[in-house]
Amino acid sequence: MTARIERLVTSGQFTLDGGTWDVANNVWLVGDDREVIVIDAAHDAEAIARAVGDRRLTAIVCTHAHNDHVNAAPRLAELTGATIWLHPDDLALWRQTHPHREPDRHLLDGQVIEAAGADLTVLHTPGHAPGAVCLYDPGLGTVFTGDTLFQGGPGATGRSFSHFPTIIDSIRDRLLTLPADTKVLTGHGDATTIGAEAPHLQEWIDRGH
Image (cartoon, rainbow, N blue to C red):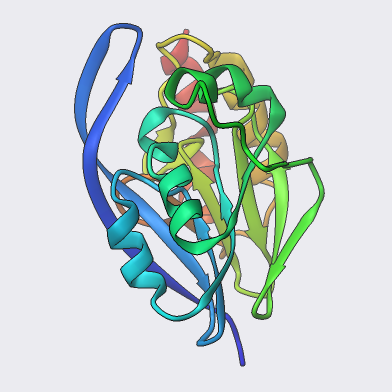
């Protein structure tokens, strides 16, 4: 059975550097009728568990460790027995939200996470956060970009642990090299494609300086 992609939107708050903002997050489920992967367990573990249903949740993959993307991960792991995956460069951010619970596994650039016919290749794309990753499945023609790339441009880089030139390098070197028709599924908001975003690279660079 071919893997399919499901979207769940959860709402809560993003907190960093002493500020708090209300946010709505995309939670992505990739799998079939038997097993599934969750990308970014945001805000509401019980709602995500209901979306998983009676399927086996094999992994909770964190695109980065800002609290709004990981705050439900330990509870979801507790409910389902799934392992939590995070790039080690984001452990400092993770510990701001979960000081007493480490991730179970470390994501590494180039590794492939498999479930239900999906093959998600980890692309380390720092900039929004040091350990930010994107997950690319050529078979699905899709890249899950977390907060690295949105419809209309790069993720924010105005807070701690972020760096604008680095996110531009990540997008140029790791994402815009993907096929133009690759669907971009983001951490917040609507989908786009690599081809729709690629022409704006120089504009983003000029705007960032």
